[in-house]
Image (spheres, rainbow, N blue to C red):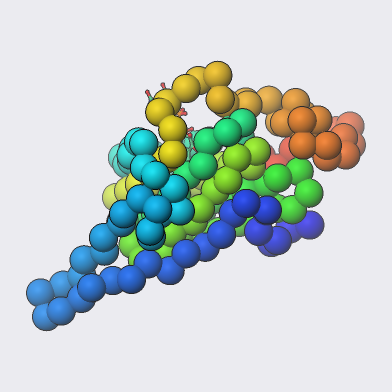
Amino acid sequence: MDDVLPAGCALIELRSRGDARGQLIALEGDREVPFAIARVYYIYGTAPGTVRGHHAHRALNQLAICVAGSCTMLLDDGHARARITLDSPARALSIGSMVWREMHDFTPGAVLMVLADRAYDESDYIRDYDRFRALVGAPEVPAGIRGPHVHP
Ligand code: T46
């Protein structure tokens, strides 16, 4: 089950327009980004050892790009699970709805930029892993085993 990209997720290589001055990547909704962009946020200043996420979204679709440094995302749709390291501004990860995610191993100075197809809505979050698995029809996690959590 590990290292199979969950349904609704994909890695996208972005076109970098480079010249002697450096690189530039442009993102437009419904082109490089597979939806109309409603929101952009970025995560930075992450303390060493931090793990973020631990939730799924009912409806939200997102595109994540580590524009500086690197971090790793654990993705789990209840049936397939993968860990994807984002280590290039030209590598984007699209994450569909109903996918559990955890972000970890942020390098110092890492900046994770996320584009989303909806405004922020706390009611779209599923923060309980067992509830998430029930909603996606995944088998129950055997007693004593704690989900996919990255935390030690
Ligand atoms: C996701 C992963 C990849 C807002 O006020 N507006 C926003 O648009 C967002 C994303 C967050 N917030 C607030 C909510 C919390 O008080 O910012 C605080 C930190 O958010 P959160 O703990 O949800 O951050 P992460 O890193 O666990 O998750 C975030 C996104 O929330 C989530 O949608 O997929 O990044």
